[in-house]
Image 1 (tube, chains in turn yellow, purple):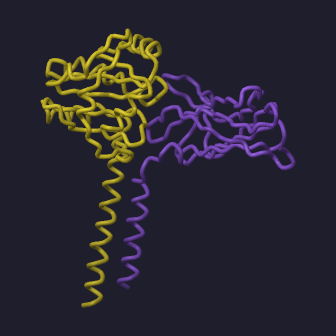
Image 2: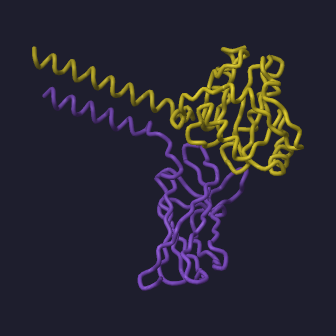
Length: 180
Length: 143
């Protein structure tokens, strides 16, 4: 009996351990880097932000409040950022009619951002903030100030999803589907 | 037997938890140290954590105080990384040592190396450029 109980406990602990491992594996295989993110949620800092575009024209992020907003923090020196942006261009076209708006916030120099935007045919607004935008991303949960970092906000202006690392189109669509 | 089972299961848990280890702070991912190995020669050592890498072209150096000057950094070959957007880049992993000739500072003032670097993690994130300020300890027999 004692031996049976021991085996039962052993199996239960092993299942728990493997489940934890499997969950972790799924996170990583999905391309989601769940770590490096804190639960910082100072979303008002974002709504109060006013940043210049590549021509120096300042725009308030609050201008887009009421849309499902995909805010992508990126930089031209960040390879994975450049890798994921073509899919944002496609999705912006695809989802514009559903009240979904992408914006890019670059921790970079305006001339570099402008060159890259033209090269890639970026079809959504790009704001430029230099390195200080990383502080803003930290307020939204980007604990280690790495890029790319993307936040999806619902129509009420609340954070619905945070992503450190590449945000795959399937994941993005599934989050947006729940908010539209 | 119970003890052994729990030990094995716990080992599974520990092993799988390692996968979820936090992305490192850049100060840990890209440890940097510098010293004067002999008068007129600086050695900069980068100890890059496994799964992280530095871009060779984004290593930059400056020396303080004004009056001291740096020679051309002797950068090791590194490995070529192909990228669809960036083309070919040379990257460094693990330990990398860069040697830089330096002229002595006026009036024997202590030297400080300013080293800029930028790197990424294989998990698919990049860190912003980082600046390290590294006071240089004098080589034995020097002031």
